[in-house]
Image 1 (cartoon, rainbow, N blue to C red):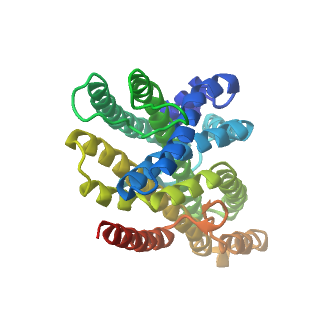
Image 2: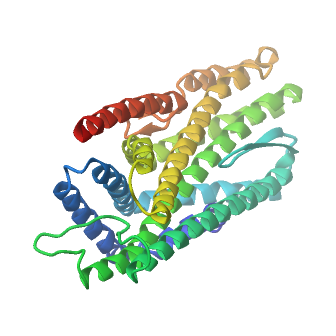
Length: 403
């Protein structure tokens, strides 16, 4: 998986290093501490269920740890499917190399690159340029993911540093995630120091890097699918100046590419749909948490760390929904590209492929959250409205409780 190693960069390398794909015993050892954290944190939330502020904040942190742990189990359960998915991308790249080595074409297409915060468009000719642009695409993705890695490392370093200061008695004495265990007071020495060090040096790095690596993997996979669809559109639009023989050969290749794109979409659904539903579940309480933070009497250093984590989850969720919405829109544009390829002047054998592409493209390739709701901006706005409604209910309960 040489090309996938370059494309998915450190996110794929991290998952392979900790054994999510082929060393499940090693991955199980890494998961012991996050699972223990989730169980003890849920118990702590039950114990402090009458404290509105603490419950909301703890629920957010528990949700993040639970979602990350659940995603890990999903990746481990579907490990072979993930490996097959990576092999299919590598196969596409190898076929492109063989095609460039064996013959050159005159296709002109727009190369689309969608990264985390912006779109880049490129025009290029021939398979040689396609291959070069694929390498350029990979380089830009590597820069983007390395930037995410740096930002994640900075946030993690800050969180660990603040927690270790609290461990040695400097600053506000509080754990990253409040936990409790029946019959044991984890907030007395030496249990508190043990839990504080374990959370900062073991649980926090594993949880944070697992969350971000999954996010990068999903985002890059969607962006690569968008590139494949833009490639297909440009091939269809480039047939106007071709001869009948060249156009027939090109339309045959386009049909095969379209089938590959549909299979690619199905693979994304199988691999990431359940994980996306977890994002939907956790997003609802994030704005509530941020606003509740501002009303709590906490140490400012811990407050900054918690808000950093909240914003990270909120921004990553928005980006996934935005990119998935573009994925769906690009799939609908394939029908327009097929209709505008000057098919009226072609022979009968050519024309029979056009309705096939158009009919299949009428059904947009939507990515869903657990197969229930499509991941798009309309659903994102619905989530925001529901979140605001949830916040108004919670803040009303808090006001009534204080009075």
